[in-house]
Length: 279
Image 1 (cartoon, helix red, strand yellow):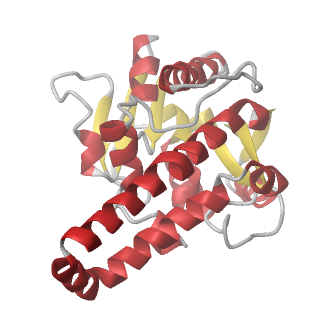
Image 2 (cartoon, one colour):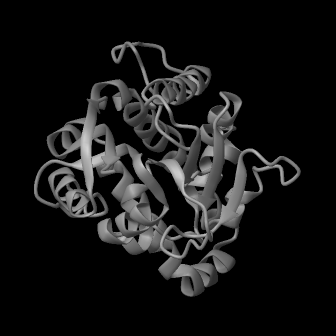
């Protein structure tokens, strides 16, 4: 599934979140009460803000400079900058760069992958990976973390970690035990671990409801309408775009399985891990 889920050209996530749902964040929300009922879009927005607030609360004392790897559309970076931290925000997607004001120095946006990042003579007190650590190989990321992290600095990861053996649905997610073991090879030791799986589950349930209750029915209605009103054009479109149609179908099926709460909690934990680099 990696070729579908990590396809930046399709970028369904960005379009759905920013253009359809009008959200200012791409990451999960954080609920103090995971059993909260009557969740709507405004509640989701509040939960996403709470995610960032709680993330900031866990940052160790003494951190003043941050490399935000996989910054998305920049809500974490802007919040940390508003709290007095100097933030360099990193993303390979130029669409994400459009959400940053180039006239503002903090946060500063760089379009690059973590693997290809080249910043001469600069290191950071903390490297942040908020839901980005699964987009590149464990060692590819850790090599650059070691390069850009000050001695005694921190690697802060907030995101999904696999707890069981890999499955087809979750084959894009690193196993937590493998990540921790690899981090030790680069001089990084875990100093804090917070499991917030239960606090993020409403995100999955809300998104799954949108997919099954709105997006899929809407696509079905549009497809049926076009087939009825423009049968010849629809037939031609299927001939030329059949592969793309199947591709979208696979992506929707993937997310339907990924977002299933029972399936998710059986294999995945949403964890905040803070590592410290040896001095």
